[in-house]
Length: 267
Image (cartoon, rainbow, N blue to C red; front, side, top):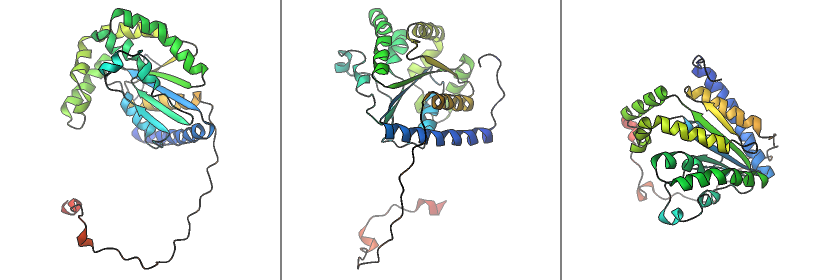
């Protein structure tokens, strides 16, 4: 719950529960594949709210042919002239697929609106059309789950600072991310307005408190599993075949091929 800060979750407890939940996600995946279900999970929230790390844990042990991450770049000139939802429709799952949107059509309600990348008319049209669009998806049988990752300004600032100092994570920062610091209240108002219009019964928003990344990941995954009516699917029976006896094949001399140098031997 929001409010009083919970104690930090011990790493050992976190890793044990994460493994259990990831095992259930593998079962969910098999249920989706076997039944032909279509699952869409939308991840939204402020920059550095923990969306990417959670998506990584969700998909870590899943089959990329079944579970696919969609993180679209800015639209092309041609896409700018299309119906706004069109390029997202192209990414929706077919039967037996899971699609996870690392940001989604809600860009128009957030960064595009706050940064002035769309007109006021386009923003208002989005707020009118989005509930209709999502009701159509749900009516057609798509399982739609929407998660908003909520992070405090202090924690976001600290995460930005660590990214600036870490060469492995600096790529996660952009001038647009840093601009969000000075527009904190504008993003808050945009989020509030978005929720008023798009938190609908057919596709409600679920808020994930994400100041504690470990708790956020576990809470989000557990909730997703609880909201999808999956069940165990019996795996096919597989047996290793007997390896046939050699039939005269001889490997070519090793000096005919170029090998990667043994860097590890110098460690």
